[in-house]
Length: 359
Image (cartoon, rainbow, N blue to C red; front, top):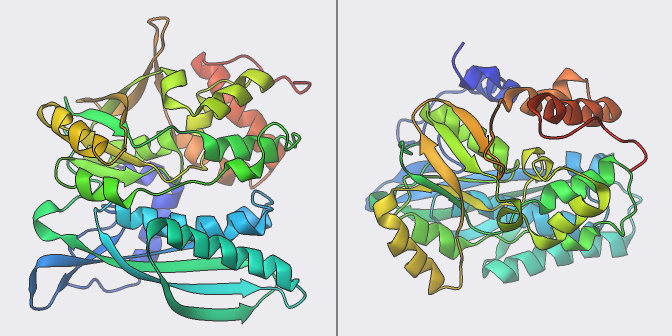
């Protein structure tokens, strides 16, 4: 079994792909890119970049309760895939499904979230479809153009490359912690979860980065997928206060939650995770800085596959993200077991003690 096949989601995607014929003009292979890249007839310098995302389980599970969040994330989740290939968006189409009894004000807030996310990114919703169903399901399909001579995918990182993210992390898992642990919203209000995609960062990164992927499934899951695709490893410097957002660190301190969990959970915030050859780092920092975009270094690429956390104490801890990524299926969706087993993994790795139910 290869590294990719140890992840159940990868196997499920592979199973589906076996049923479909591959377009010979498609540039990326399975798992290799956040967006699908297609050659355009009579356009030798551009690829068509296409992606689609659905916000559904986040709503039915109660993770998102504010309709504005639902609409906002639907757009941002989709456009982050275009950012990860350095594409310039052309537009978005949407599909909106909801129950017939939903109040107009609720639906209007979903629409407002979508519209304001589009305004933030300077893009437009071009059209779409509405349906009546038993649960809310929101889908966006975005398409854009990327430069052929600046092709950026998930493949290409090499030992010695430096690894960065385009902003502070942890907000997605902070909201997940509050919901799964049934904490008061006062600990981390849902209104704090407003992930922002940087399309400018994606276009600039495409000039320098050796690979790129968005952090929609969390920082450590993103690193794990890149590790499996590129057959390399990562040394991660655990400078939590630099990597995590201040409000996320505050939540960790209030609840006694180990900071690593804010990177290891499967709910992210649509940052760009990239590897950059060392000789390009100064150039890209200057280019991004001119646009008001900062890079946060998280570590380096190493030769042997695996993820190593370099703690400030000097201790090095090797972690295996496969059990974390497969955990929801392992516990058959039992959220109480999920929390317990997730915590136990950190205890096994020496990153935290046993779960305290009275925190």
